Length: 241
Ligand SMILES: Nc1ncnc2c1ncn2[C@@H]1O[C@H](COP(=O)(O)OP(=O)(O)OP(=O)(O)O)[C@@H](O)[C@H]1O
Image (cartoon, rainbow, N blue to C red):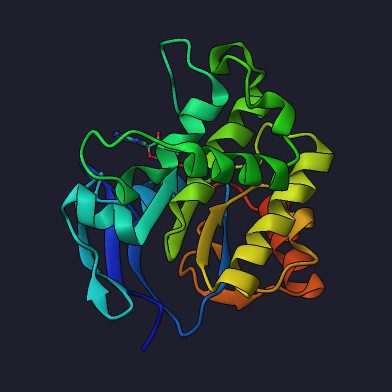
C-alpha cells in the first residue's frame, strides 16, 4: 500500500487554478522536495493537503483519505506553515512542548518526561541554548528552529513543511536537511518540504516535484536532476496560470 497517493488533485483560488490534475504515488516512506518559482502554487498545494482550501481529487495516506476533523488529522499529519505568529511572550520550551498535544488528554499538564523529550529535540537541532529564552525575543531563524522542534515532537507519519530553512544560516540549513533525511531513513516518515535551497538537496535521497512545470511529476533526486531543475528555474519565466 502506498504511503501517499495523490489522485487528480486540482486546487487554487477563485478563477485561478494553480494545481492542475496532479497525480503521484509514493510507495515507501520518502522525502519529496517541492520546488518552483515564487507564486507557482507550492504553498497552495500544502494548503489543499491540510484542508485549508477546497480541492478536487483525492489524497490518500496509507490508503485512507485524509481525515477532515482536526484532531484525527493531527495524528497523521504535521504541518509547518511559512509564517507562524505568536503574539504573547512564552518560553521556547513551552512552545515546543505543545507538539505533544495530541498525546495528551484534555487539560492534562505536561510533565518531566515531556520536557525531557523537548530537550532531546532541541539538542538534535543544536538549539538547547534557546530552551529558556522568550520566544518572541528570538531572531527569525531561531524562531524557525523552535517551530521545527515542535513539529518533531508530533512524530506523525507525514510531515509537510513550507520553507523550513528559509531564514536559517548555512550551518542550520544543513542540519535541518540532514534531520529530515534521518526522519525518513530511521523513523520511516514521509516528508514533503517546500524549498528554494536546491543545492542543499544534493546529498539527499528522494524526489523533486517542480510545481513550475506544466505537468509536475516526481523525479528522483540526483546531481543531474537538481542541476537541470536549477537551470530551468533560473531561465524560465514564471508560468502565468
Ligand atoms: N487566499 C488567496 N486568494 C487568492 N490568491 C491567492 C491566495 N493565496 C495565495 N494566492 C495566490 O496564489 C499564487 C500562489 O501562491 P503560493 O503561496 O501557493 O505560492 P508559492 O509557490 O508557495 O510561492 P513562494 O515561493 O513565494 O512562497 C500567488 O500568486 C498568490 O498571490
